Length: 260
Image (cartoon, rainbow, N blue to C red; front, side, top):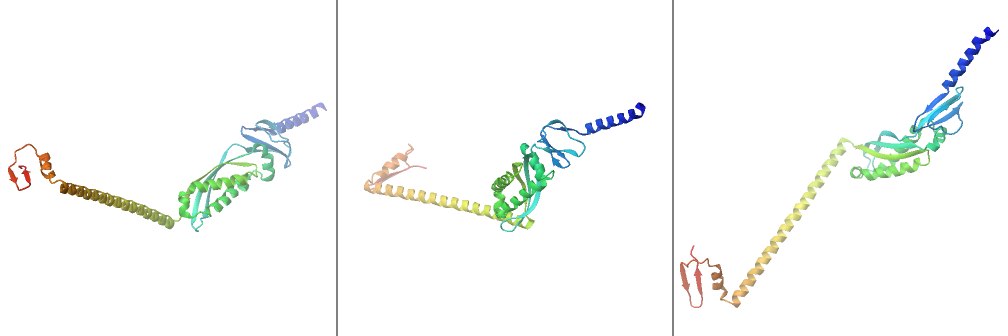
């Protein structure tokens, strides 16, 4: 009888050891596990390290709580009904203390059930409030609005939002050409305005210069009328020291003509 039951005992011992090993799990750093038994959560969150789960109907679902990245591409419409294809990137993480809640309400596909629809829906709402040409220069403000709204919505879930980046916005070729032509026209208009200001300034300077010259001549004329002797005096001041080639003497006036 002992020989009959010995192989059976060894078999069950080996089976028990195999099942025990099968129930051993390792939880890596940055990851939190959720134990389930026949689909029902049992116990609290499983922290990094070695743990054991009943292999009969038991399982360990692991959730990475480190920051993760999600890249999305979507088509949306602006306020002026222009089609815009957008590339948007978000980073997010899971609240470690709410992993069991996340598993219970959303499961492994939480990203597709929470994050993606939230980001897409809010992005379309925000972009729909912008005109296409203004969105080109207002991308930073639009991104800020999207992040604030997405963050507020996800705050009601175990997911926490990191950053939001709109990496690209593409419009139709026709619209992009129209925008380019508008920008060129605006630049030319600015250049024309600057040129007009320059011409006006140059004209103003000429008026000021002419006015100053006229006033100078008026002052000199008034001075000569008051003192006729200023004419020969100025000639003497301009004399270079050479003997004059001609000396003209008049009745009441004389002048020195300098030799050339």
